[in-house]
Length: 186
Ligand code: SF4
Image 1 (cartoon, rainbow, N blue to C red):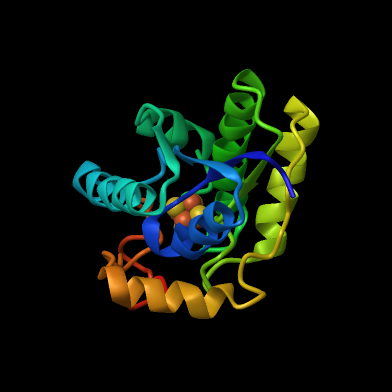
Image 2: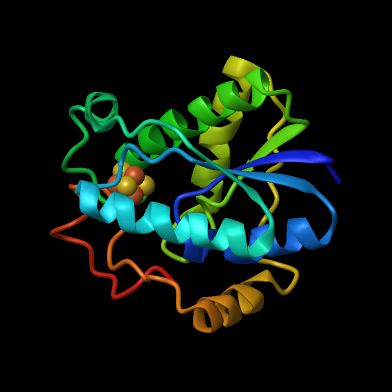
């Protein structure tokens, strides 16, 4: 178990159980909100505010990096028509994980983990592949734990209900918006 951990998070529903578990286990936990993929800005603000609320309720530190959608748009150029779980998502994960790696390195965290693969709509192996690539580029250990296991999925569902967390209806980016078949992210 790491003492000082950075958790890259996409949203409150995916991260709530992980944050609770880590804080309860005595881990000095910082949640990094770096999501230039989220569109539009009003949606970004909603997800960020919910993330902050969860961190405050559970005793984790919260860090928001600059919202820079133009960097994300550039990173996924040419992949706009890819389906969810396709190559656009690999680029999206890598961009965010690399930034998180750099933050973890600069502020001397023991390791980095993320909740980008927690939703059932996500491919955890795809997230882990992007995370390993970012790790090789920057050098901070990445904890590739499956945060859906060990009772965390049940805890997540309970916390979503209990805290009445905002449940978004699409993954986040402008290209996932019109075609997304999902009804929620749970
Ligand atoms: S669908 Fe989700 S993971 Fe894929 S590119 Fe869009 S925001 Fe990123």
